[in-house]
Image (cartoon, rainbow, N blue to C red):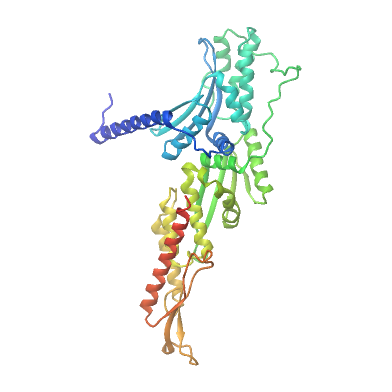
Length: 448
């Protein structure tokens, strides 16, 4: 018997009520959802293929003793959110409702959406739709067709070949629970000593990989599925903060995944975008890093498809916000930098140090820099009496000067202005910086 505290009971009840609510919503959406009139099927297909590359699975289940024995397994899984809900219902419609679309709790207790099929009738269509994928996913669709042909044969050696193909579909992952010999034994088969499947001409079947370069939309799908879009913060030797945009794509190490990652590398090199490829022991990593690469080059390729980022829309928005802060130079003062730090922490993140830690570094840096200014404030310099020595006694006003590198075509205004009173100068500076920060944030968020 399992005992729950009152709060635990309440949480379990609330979770299941939430599940029921989402299941009801899904049922209603299935009946009423329609694709927009301007829906771009080709763009969405490339995106869906990239996501399937990252999060999908295509394989075969062997069930000795069950009528058909071989069952294809297709699924695509994602944590539940409003954005993933919209993506999955769209894909379900695009796939002509051939798959099952359900929501349930995962083994870890998270709500997940599952698009799945174990119907042989759907495999040819799914193979066509996801033919932009690479590696095991691309090859497994071809192998499934051979498994189906072999499994319909009355010849035992063909059934044995089907078992061998199905059993060895995946080169990576957890060890098999049931041994191949045990499956063959249950099917009344001996060890497999026959050659691999052949083509109609009698040649050995060659399960070659997809050799076409992926597209940017495919890359976006892959990133929203299993990629990282992150703003890295680093303290510099001078005590300031280095702001580093980073995009990381990773795959488990295997010969097929290496081929895919090398094609991604070729894609960016063909666009004259430097990319770092790391071959670790257990994984392959592709890194796009730094303002020049990510903001000045890659972001320009991603922004035209901002409407297709779904549950990673917030990551793209943060990239654009930080980029605009840096383009305008509004982050090169304490107020602007603190707001940039707040933005980085207001979006989903996984950081070692806290927001307070980084704000303290910013404060220390600017306090030190300001100690060399007569005003003791950045962006404020003294105005001296004409034809007099530059000493404190001859200061007649305080000039607030603009920190802006660009006005974004006149959208941002920061007029330099003189004040007799230093406190008034500080208030003007802070007010103008706040206005510009708000204008920048509105500029990005109103583009949604």
